[in-house]
Each structure stands twice: as C-alpha cells, then as structure tokens.
Length: 489
Image 1 (tube, rainbow, N blue to C red):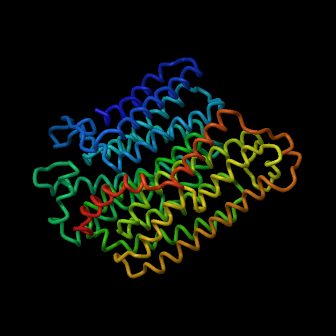
Image 2 (image 1 turned 180 degrees about the horizontal axis):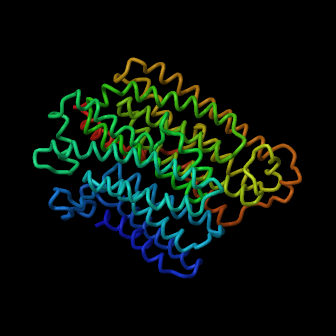
Image 3 (image 1 turned 60 degrees about the vertical axis):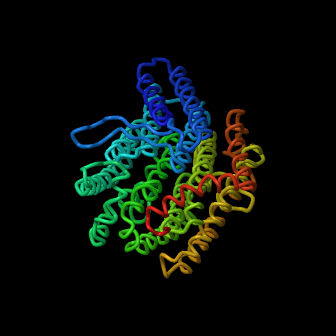
C-alpha cells in the first residue's frame, strides 16, 4: 500500500486544499501533508524490496486491459524519495512568499506532486500516460496564473511542446499495446515485445518515445520552452520543474524506452548522444553570456541533464549508476540554487547580475551556503555531484555501444570546465566586490532559509564523502535495466 499512499496523500491534500479559505491554513496544510508523504517514502526505503507492501495491482479499465498497477522498486524509490524531499524543502523555502488566491496555488502544487509520484510508480503504460498528463496540467495553471509578465506566451509554448510530445508517446503506447499477445498495457508485457517487433519498427518507434522524453528533460533541439518557462514561473514552480519534473524524461528512458526498444536505442544511440553533446555545448556557452540569474541557472540545468542523457546511451553499468545517483544529486543541488536566486530577487527586486555585487558583506550566511552548493554543482571532489559525474564519465569513456566514446567524453569534459567558469564568475560578480546603492540594503537570510539550505549542504557532503550506500542501492536496479536492454545477459 506504500505506492498508493505516495499518490493518495498529495492527491487528497490538493483536493481538500481547494476548500480551505484561509491562506495560512492552506499553506500549512500542504506543508503538513508533504511532510507526511516524506515519512511514508522514507518508511518504504526500510522495507525489503520484495515486500508485498511495495506493489499494488487492481482493476482499472477492464475493457482495454489496463490495470491500476504500481511498484516501488529501486529506480522509483530513488525518485519518489527525491520528490518527497523536494516538496517540503520548496514549501519551507518559499514559506514567506505571498500568493493571490493562495489556496488554489498550494492545492495545484500538491496535485502536481501526486502526478509526479504516479509517473515514477506506474507499471501500466496507460496509467503511466495518465499520470504523465496529470503532473503537467497543474503546472500549466500554476505558470499561467502566478507567473511573470510574459507568462502567457511562455506557458503556451510549454503547453504546445509537451502536448505534442505526449501525443507522440500515446501513439507509440497504442502501437505496442496492439502488438502484445493479450492486448495488455502491463510493463512486463511491453518488455517482452523486443523479440517480436522488428528492428526497423523499433527504429521509428524510438523517436515517438524519445521526443516526448527529450522535451521533458529537455534535450536540444526540444529545449526552447525551458528558459522562458523557468524565467516566467513562480519560484516554487520553477523548483518543481527543474528539480523534479525533468527527471520524468530521464526516468522514461531508463524504465520505458531502453528496455522496451533496445534495438531502436542501439540504432539511434549515437544520434541521441550527439544531440545531448550539442545541447551541452550550446547551453554552456549561452549560460556564460547571461545577465539574468534565472536564465543562467536554467541553461546550466540543460547542460547537466544533457550529460545524464548521454550517460544513459552509453549503456554501461557504471554510467547508469552515475545517472541514478546524479538524478538525486542534481535535484537537490538545482533546487538550492533556485532558492538562492529567489532570495536575491525578493530582497533586491532584480535578478540582473550586473546590478548586484558585494552581497557577501551583507549576507555572509547566504554567501557561504551558495558557495558550497555552487561548488557541488560544478562537481568539486568531496561533493555529491563529483561522485555521479565521475561514474558517468567513466561509463561513457568505457562504452562499447558507440565508437565515438572518446569524442563524447572529451566534449562533455569541456562543458564541465565551462560550467565552472560561469558559476564562479556569477559568484564573484554577485557576492564579492564592492556593494552598490541597491545591495547596501541587503539582509542575511532567515532561520527557515538557513535550515533548508543547511540540510542541502549536509546531503551534499554526506553523499560526496560516503557514496557507498548509494552505489549499493543502485547496483541491482542498474543490472536489471541492462538485462532488459539485452546489453547484459
């Protein structure tokens, strides 16, 4: 029943939240239920992976052969834990932010949490698609109702991209469904199709799924919705999009695309990897030219996600272990960066790097915490991201799935260097140097903000210094994924 609770608690919280009249009550109710969801996710980690409480199966749409089937295995445990940690962190970090019609805002936030949880838990293709859409719909309203001045244009672009991607994926799901022996949407039945669907059919089916997942990550050239949407969305929504929802695309590659269409993945792996590399270079160069903090972090995220996608197509055990660890690391690191950007914007009334300077003198705690998060973001040794990136680079370099492994590894390494340049340059311009008339009024962060960023810093060092539990946790799942992809027998 653990998987059901992970969906039901935020879902009921959101539905009840619409009826709460008081803004503070709505905020506290959402935070309380998010913490309860976190407790359930942590409890799920303590159970044996074969425990009956980690699976759920019931009738759903009998006429179509679709069941309400959920499973909490290694991959979904990791990502539901990230989701369960992220929402309380986001709600506490933005606790002092006021929203017009706050009850609807917090209710939609919890509904998006329910949808995201469902994506990571579903083992029925139609149910997966249902939750995929459920996660997007609340975010669409959150962006369009509480976003910036250009929110309508940004939200429209976001909607068009994701809608087209979802339709393509639905076509692919229906095609696979019609080719199962018993007309089933069950994941296990889809996994058996690789032996019956011809390689040429797998090749075009690959793109129906890959485009949907590439839009979500996003991967070049399907990325153009992301910077505008991140910039125009409320800070809390940007954190959800960047920290959690992009992992839906990576999850889709690991759970659905690679294991179901291994020959399609093999045929187009180099092409997809090339798109990742182009996106990483492009995003890194654009990030170096940004004067807006939000857009800098947005393009930084594109580059980091591109590296994870590249590592997936390396199809080596060490690379996939790195991806799984880095999905969690990137989630907490990028949310911490967004928290800092939001704190600066709320205090200074601007996100322009050129208008800031000397903040370390006025907000030393914020400067220290940001320095640690930023160093983790560029994968400094002893930080969490170093572990994930080292594994991914090792896996990409040793990959036998491509003859371009040296080129891919070298180019990705250059992007890591560029990441260090623009992140350190941003820190120097915003936090050091002389204060100006604008930054003279700056104050250090509040206790709740120190606690949240402090928790992230603790996670950064714990995972960075002692990664062995994370490696052991991911090993079994990675072996299973590679077995399904027919790259490991």
